[in-house]
Image: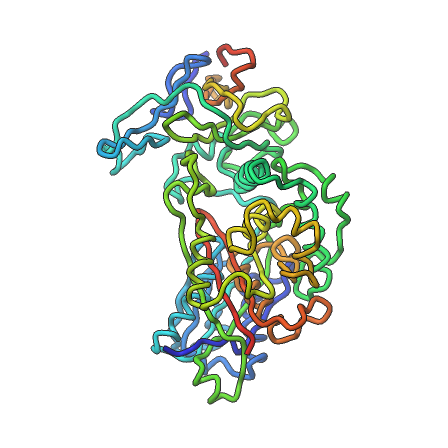
Length: 143
Length: 381
């Protein structure tokens, strides 16, 4: 069984070793996420973003989204997931899925750390992995 | 430069109409607006129309008459209706035309909108991983705003309660039954802190407005509210908007704040002069935030204002007197024009049980993805 990221140049590593990939504008130094592609790519230097930050906003996705959402399962097996923005110090706030058992315990300003999450198993049995953040005070470990 | 007036207004009821196409609803709204003004279609010099999911807006032409008029289709997300109005306003203001129509119709399938990342220049993973949902964005934005400025869930519930009550008094609304506060608060959670009854639904409907220059209106022997200011503004860098994989944590003015400021300047008026307002209420948090963004109060003051009934009919600033998007649903092409229709009816004293007594100045504000806002200010004739 193999693992592959949901997209190239989105993040590297896994579990506590996860780093999001962003861009640093070559002239202004401004940090962007994700790393731009296409015609504007040349303006940016590829950078690894800070692995830790603070929770800036959050909610819970309570129903299974329509396509293009491509997570595992169906209506019946869908499990709500938390999402939010995590402010990376001195960089930018990134939108992310949040790995948390009880979203009611989330609070603005809470310390968060990058991790990975299995999004789905594809037809060949490979795991498709995306990035996520988890509260820093929860147990870490690989996805 | 000439003044621009709304001399006719027509609406096709919002809601679900399984046996009627969006196009048919659009044609009916236009026919009603023409009848309201006592004019016929061949007199129209131009039309600006919008529809997102119900075909091309100019498909109304063969139904109404191929008269050779200038017809332009408008597409500007949720602000499509507001943008059609603004285009009509400029067409007359410029002196190029003096009589024409702005209209919009739509017909969406049930359930939340599903956006295509590619259409918005976003990477595919953003949709695949389940981050690209309008409902989610509204939950995120409301959650942060409430925590920042001390807005309670109960106040969100009060916004919805008022919407359904007002909707029960509007002939063109979809939701005709008032819903008790408890039921709103306890309904299924969709995107925390927003419950099912705190969200509007995609729907169907159509609205049309006939606009004329001041001089043309008088020549025709007609009257109608004057459009004192109208503006569309888009997001600034760093603004917290829908469909954003990342944002600047330092927030500046929103597109609504920019559009409201521009419209107030054009109108030479301020928020304190407004007697009735129709504000984009895609969900309850939006109405709360837009109150402050339009300048009606400071952020956080909504908690007391809404609890005290300020935004109810009879309050100091009635908001969404026809129940807004919450009670009417959101057919994207028509929604912004419904707001202006409602304001025109209020200023003409035609709102029966939901009439705001003595309304002289009315504001409408429609917000749309990916971060734009249209504001219009109308004055009683």
